[in-house]
Amino acid sequence: MSKGVGHEEGRHGKGRLWRRGNVWWIQYYAHGQQHRESSHSDKKGVAEKLLMKRLVNAEDGTIPVKTSITYDEMRQRLVTNRQLNDGITAKQSTACLKYLDQFFLGKRVITDEDVDEFKVARKATGVSNATINRSLAALRQMYRLSSKKVKNPPTVKLLPEPPPRKGFLTRDQYLRLLAALPARVRPIFKFGYHTGMRFGELHDLSWSHIDMAEEMIRLEAEDTKSGEGREIPLGYFPELVELIKELRKQSTSDKVFGSGGFRKAWSRACMRVGLGRMLWECKTCHHRIESDKQPQRPGKKMEKPRCECGADCHWKYVGLIFHDLRRTAIRNMIRAGVDESVAMKISGHKTNYIFKRYNIVDTADVKQGMKKLAEFYQAEDAKLEPSGARPN
Image 1: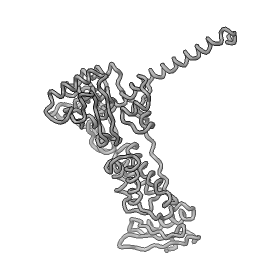
Image 2 (image 1 turned 120 degrees about the vertical axis):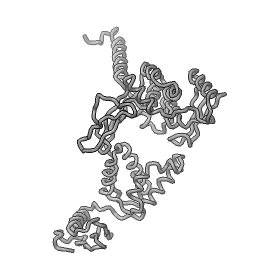
Image 3 (image 1 turned 90 degrees about the vertical axis):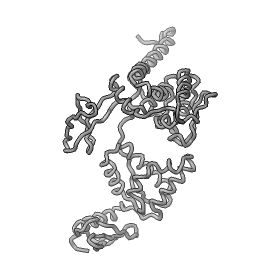
Image 4 (image 1 turned 45 degrees about the vertical axis):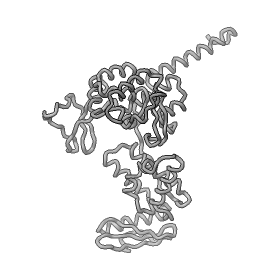
């Protein structure tokens, strides 16, 4: 190795450099194991700096031990574990592995730097931290399942996530939005509000899922995100039962709800009742620009603002979304006194953590809580009055 590397020989040696084609490679030892790594550069100086860094890491003990298991094998362990213990399909068990596969398939050693590069690359595509964290959580689980084969796994830190969405509908807002929506999309809106079902579940709902005699919706395991079937009684809501009967008379397909064009109808109705608005959003950095103007009708051109990064912007709807109906239903169930475990059965939540993120607390809830606390203190004081123990 060139003397220009500037690292004194220690118990891990000096390492060496060599060129493969136009790219420089480095070799060094750590934990008694030989490591070879590409510098991804045709410049020797870049390779020398990388080698010096690796030799320092080797002395510090921060170079991970080469494992006897590859990412591909860890991945298969995870998929098998999810299918056996969580009872989900192969497709569902690999849903969050797509982007991990693009980075790590074929790798035997994954370093902290590899994990950081994965985070940076995913963030560059504009996805949220929460989405990236689902992949990172899967990577963590892989290493937990393969802990006996991996001595020093990389540190997989999750990215900070924003607090859960606060979107939900009051009863008055529900009635105003219902009146603002076109008649063709009101049925799916009503069912979303009353049952808390996901939009995908309602969109794919077929007549085979409806038990008219029992007045029940029955979802099979393959119909749900959680991979578990569930039943949703409708008999306590005569409005929904009558609506189902009416839809059955009018139906010309296997689908219960004809929800084509729902998104546009939804955003327009939400803006009409003050529950949504439009913003300009940059196509590259996703920065949003406030504007008092609204999108023009088709065929009319409107000058698009340019972001500070120089990219064009496009219209983006922000405000109430259909999934907020799910939060609303869960919130209402808890306030109606439904036991949490029963509410989770109805909503189809598998974990208590996610369920509680949906149970939103607003200012009215806080006031009600403080009122109950004050009433409790008053009751306690009343117990003390006969004995004269209450201070003045």
